[in-house]
Length: 99
Image (cartoon, rainbow, N blue to C red; front, side, top):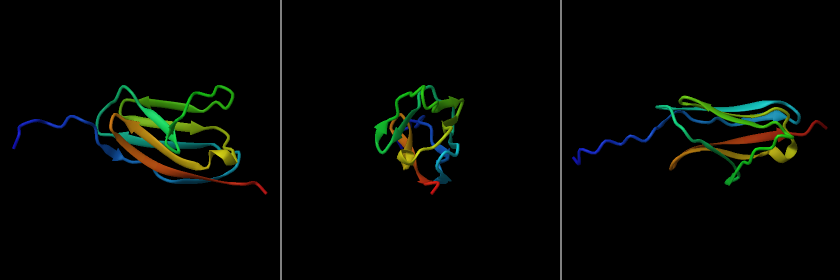
């Protein structure tokens, strides 16, 4: 045994897939084993950039991470990833059209 402790956070609650209708509000939530200072959210492997026009919210409070899309579009249908350091959790958002 090396005696080196692994201090990286682990996922206590991973992301879960979400299915919604177009224009509905959704929130992805996940939780780590300890508080973190930096969280990245990705859509289909690319970092999600802030978009004030869409009012998409990405935040973390202690060990909990949240990603909210207040009014989904068909183009939001994708795989989403919450990444902390080298660890991540993924889930699928399926958006169904209104008509």
